[in-house]
Each structure stands twice: as structure tokens, then as C-alpha cells.
Length: 138
Image (cartoon, rainbow, N blue to C red; front, side):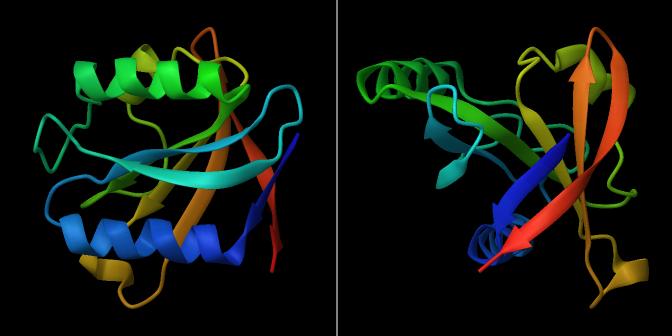
């Protein structure tokens, strides 16, 4: 599989990650049902307010699911940042990966790579992590 994503969405994810540092940033990118085309970025609040863990607020998540049902959309990308480690899913990330059709995007904001950036995408299905190619559009 390949994640197709716009440069604007990548830039927005990094901007949110920098703004929310030292906490992990998180959010989703939505697309039309069954199209696997991500077009609407929706930043979410990290209810854990943690530099090592993220979780969506249950009320925000319920609201998100109602919104995507109303708009015939689906979650195409679930993203979050790692503040001190590489952009690779942690054991916790893998355990909580509950959307088998989603692309799981991780970015790293760790200081060793600044100002460089690390942006990677994975499929996580039944605990199996597979890195995938990223195709960037304008």
C-alpha cells in the first residue's frame, strides 16, 4: 500500500506537533467513504496531555464518528507525534490501533533530528506493523 497525502497536510501535522510540544500531538485526516483519499485534516486534543502517550478525548471521538457518519466519510489517516523517539509505532500504539483500514502516520519532533523531520506511515493490522510508501502531492 501507499499513502497518498498532500504537502499541505504534512506541513499542518508538523506545525501542530511543534505547537503542542512537549506533548504528543494527534489527529485524523478524513476522506470519502471507500476512496482511501485523505482530504480533510482534523486536529484532535491529546486528552492524556503527555509527552509519551496520546489518546483522543472520548467526547471528541464520539463527535468525530457522528460527523463522519453524517458526511459519508471515513478515517483515512490517524496521526500522532513522538517527541523523543523515532517515528515508529510503540507497543502502546500497536495495542491501541483499532482501525485496520487506516494509515497510521507518525512524525518525530525529537531534538536530535531538528530541524530535519521524520514522517512515516504504517498499516497496523492485528498487531502486525507494516511500513508503507508515502506519495506526496501538492
